[in-house]
Image 1 (tube, chains in turn cyan, orange):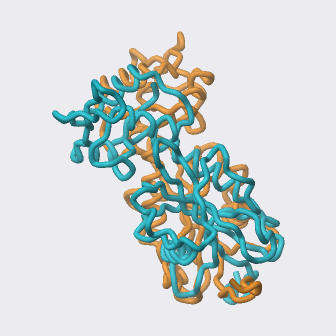
Image 2: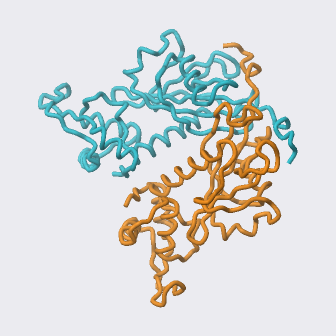
Image 3: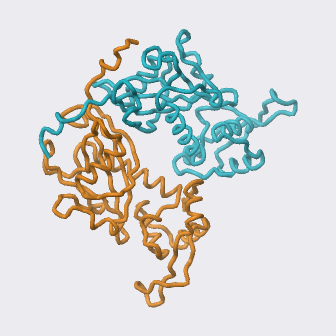
Length: 230
Length: 230
C-alpha cells in the first residue's frame, strides 16, 4: 500500500442532519425546517449543515441544531451515516443523522420564533428533500426498538403523570392502540413506577392516580433492558 | 444562508474500518491486520481504507475487507461513525466502523494465506492503532445487546449442535459463565429449538442431544425480540 494513501482520497463532503421528535399533549411530532437555499429551495427538510474541520460530529450536530432552531441542551444520539452516491444532487455528500426525543413544552421557548422551523404531527408531516424521509423512518424504527427494550418517558413526561399519559406515550411511539389492562400489568411488572397518594382530577371527577418514576429502578432497567411486548 | 454553502466546506477524509468477530471451537475471536504503511507501521489494526467517490459505505466496507483479507460474502452492519478531531495524526479523518460476526471455519479458506491478517482470542488481542480499541469495545457492546435481545447463532453454529455449544456461544459473547439449568430453561422458553432424535457422542459416552433451530420461530423472535437476561 502506498504511503501517500492519504493524498489519494476523493473529495467527499460530510453533512450532519438532526431528527428531532417531540412529545406534546399525547402526540408524537417532528421538527422540520423550510430550506432557504438551492437545491430544493422552499421544501421541508431536517435541520442540516456541514461538519467543520475543528469539531467532531456530536459538536456539529449541536451547533447546527442551535443555529437553525435555537434549541439547546438537547442530548442527540448518532443514528446512522447515509451514503448513497447520488443522495445529494449538487456534490457527493455523506450525511450522519442524529436524533433526539424531547418534551416540546419544556423547549418551546427556545425555538427561534421568526425562523421557519415547525412541529408537524408525524402522520401529517410533508415530504422531505433528498433521503430525509428514509432518515426519519430509520429513526422511528430505532425509537420503537428502544421503547420495547427499555423504559422511556423520564425526560418526556412531567414529574407526576397518570397511567393514561404514559400509555399515550407508548402508543404514539409504537403507533398502535394498546389494551389498557395489559399495559398496566406489563408496566407494573417492571417495578419502575411509584403510585402517589394524589389524583389528577382534570380528566374525570373520580380522578386518576398520579405516578412518578422510581429513578433507581428505572435506571436499572435502562441498563439491563426488558421486553415490553404486550 | 449562502448558496455557495457546498464550496465552503472543509476537507475531511472518510475512512471505513471493519471489525470482524469470529466464532470457532467455542471461543470468540477478532481478525486483525498488521499495518504496512506509516504512521503506526507494523502495529495491529482493524481492516481499513478510504471511501471512494463512486461507492457507498456498504460497498466500501466490502471492498476493503476483501482487498485486505480475501473474505467475501460477509454481511457487515454499520456500527458507528468515529470523528474525534485528532483521531488520525496525519489528516482530519472520519471513520465509519462496520462489524460482522462470522463462522471462522466456514470462511477460513477465503483468507489470503500470505497476508498479515490474523485471528486473536478477544482476551489476548494486542493493542490497536488510533481509536480502534474504542471501535472494538463499541462493537462488543452492540453484540452483547444483540445477544440479550434476539436469538443469535443461526449463522455461527453447525446445522446440528448441542445445548453445550449454544451455551458456549452465549458465554463467549456475554463474557461470563452461565448457569446450565437456567440457560436451558431460558432458551427453551423461547421455543426456537427443535430437539433431534440424535445424539452427539464426541464429548461423552452417554452423548448429548443434538438440536437444530426452528427457523420460523427463530425469525419471529429476531423480529419481535426477547429478553434473554438470566
